[in-house]
Length: 157
Image 1 (tube, rainbow, N blue to C red):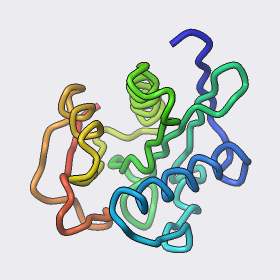
Image 2 (image 1 turned 180 degrees about the horizontal axis):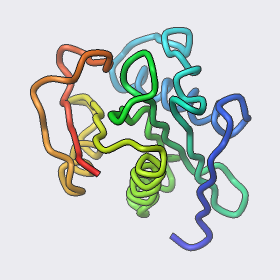
Image 3 (image 1 turned 180 degrees about the vertical axis):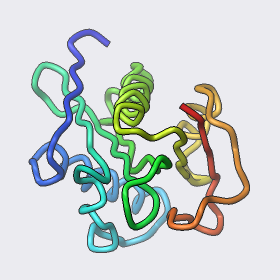
């Protein structure tokens, strides 16, 4: 997408927080839940255990994605969290660009394998992951978050 920029942002920055809130709002809408960020440990997305990337088009928020180390200390295994793209920019390549960027940044951080999960009400996410080298797995490693009915994916970097 023309004009798309991706930058690493502090989890407290307005762009990162806006993405996290938008992602939770969308999950609530799709799954009929009423969660908020109080159930999500944003500290895990801070260096050195994690990071958060924000995408912008012409300075306007376009989306974002984070990664965190699985386990209580930094490790070589990470978990991708809260990929979200603004609805009017979906199917523009923004999600693919964000995923490529978080995989690249994860390599720089020393991760050799990543995990992620998504749900049945997110068919576009399932297609994205299946089409970009992520393989479905039955179980997550200890320390990863996993919902019982989630689709679980892993990828070696």
